[in-house]
Length: 192
Image (cartoon, rainbow, N blue to C red; front, side, top):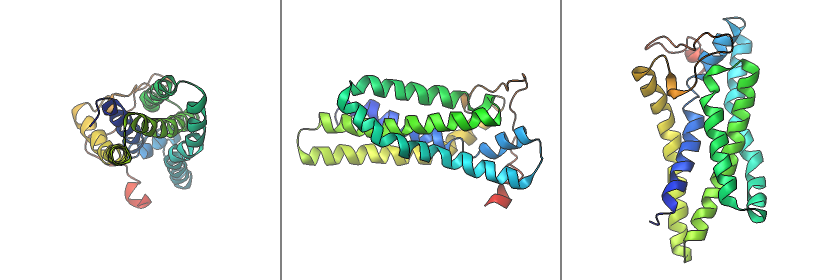
């Protein structure tokens, strides 16, 4: 494996984990904002917040490729990773409206990161077999991130319940985001 592909693997895996790690927390974040009002609204917000990340990725991916053809893609990749990191870190400290925006920004960043990391694999590989192998490794990193995200979320909640996923956890009104230790979202069984 080429050394240049390792950061791309990490970026792709982290981008996928940024989505799936917050999926278990979305019902709690919505519940905190709604204050227990309206189960129908709760389910709708959780569904839309879950879908907005891949939608952003779907929208951004074609533009990322076009921009990579015109500009230095490494710089564009750096900014996409930074946008993903900042939007993910702020997820626990926002209102519901801002949470929608942060999930959209994270999805757009995800949509830029994946094709740009595949471009890294394309540029470092010399022959078609090597390219196929690197694309396979990068795709596996994507699925590893999807797999690891919820496990990271639950592990971080057990280690640091006051600071899940090391995300900023102060709401705009100053109250911390909290999830009761070991208790799942009360609506999770109803939603599944």
